[in-house]
Amino acid sequence: MSATRISVDHVARVEGHGDIRVVIEDGAVTTCEMAVVEPARLFESMVLGRSFEEVPYIASRVCGICSASHVVTDLRAIERVFGVGVTDRTEALRELLVYGSYLQNHATHLFVFAAPDFLGHKSVFPLADANPELLERALGLKALGNELCTLVGGRSIHPITAVVGGFTHEIDAGEYRRLAEAMDAARDFALASVDLFRDFDTLDIQTEGDLLAMVAPGAYPVCTSDTARFVEGGYEFSAQAVEDEIEEYAVGHSGAFLARARRTGQPYMTAALARVNASWDALCKDARYAAAKAGLRPPERNPFANNIAQAVELVDVLDRCAALCRRLAADEFSGASAPVPFTVRAGRGVGFTEAPRGALFHLLELNGEGRVTRASIMTPTAQNIANLEADMRQLAEKMVAAGFDGDMIRLEIEKLVRAYDPCLSCSVH
Image 1 (cartoon, helix red, strand yellow):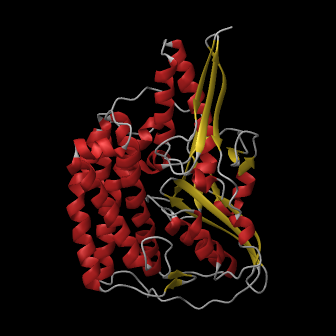
Image 2 (tube, one colour):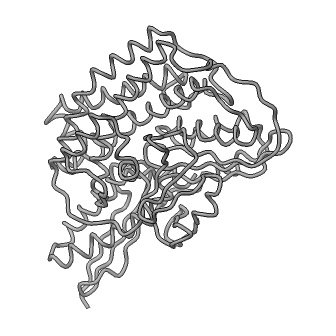
Image 3 (cartoon, one colour):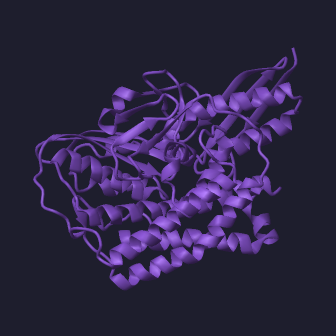
């Protein structure tokens, strides 16, 4: 019996540590595993007994890039328990904070992690030598995201100004106008990024799993809706019922829980690609045009297209942030951003946002003193791993049938893993 074993210890250019194991015997793929080898980080246990005021700051440490999303998600869960309704101005500031992490994440992933795969480089360093202007402009986008998070959240990671009911500080109108101009200036490079990733060759595979994203009528929501949609399944559910709709389960080869839809038993992908499929019509005009030009239209089920979807979102984010900043400067949102009054009470609430890598759920149960009695976090990467393994298997089977050797299969599987933009440290929260 002939056998080919593909082993990748510590996949390069992803956040965290994971191993790939693929075994091909007599032309059949018998093993295909994405093993997360990170140790458990125990954030769900860490917050037990803590006051609600501490929880968002602790949870933000789950991720250094998605920290804003974790803070906003926890705040939404706590506000659900306390029955807090925030002002439109606070909602706009929270959107800016989450969008800042999109700029940070997408620019880093696309140009530092993914682009070397398609430009013939083993890392970002040869790319920096070969095309310093490309990398400099990409890092400029990340720096813009850092600045946005700093000005809105108080610092570039682990924001401190976002609290239950509002914000403790807000910048002045002149700063908003300056940020809007910076967003406008970055748009041309973002549009060029879509064209760049459109031109990269990828293998044609179609994910067998579903796609999950936040939805709202006429919107491209990232933190203002409680509704999630399984795109292929064709049904929606409230985030408050997430445990009834999504099942987490353990496997022996991975330190992370995996996930599947309870109604169908299917794995699923949650990412920029899922958002574009779910809310295509609500993309900003420039982003929708760039996506159409790149051939990215629903239904798009090739997971490699997540790279293009992230590039499209860069265009969308810049347009939205410029508009939000100008409206904030002109005082067009109702209400103030200062925290609204509220009463501490016992209850259960689920916060839901679209982190850069996909749907993020935080479930909190609080007692009458506002202390945590139960916490559960579903990160995008943990939800994605089962679908990633299924896509890896499909890719390997297709390449085996086409006669590719082990080295080529290994390279394409690594590219697929990076296209998912996993945060493996987050997956073992």
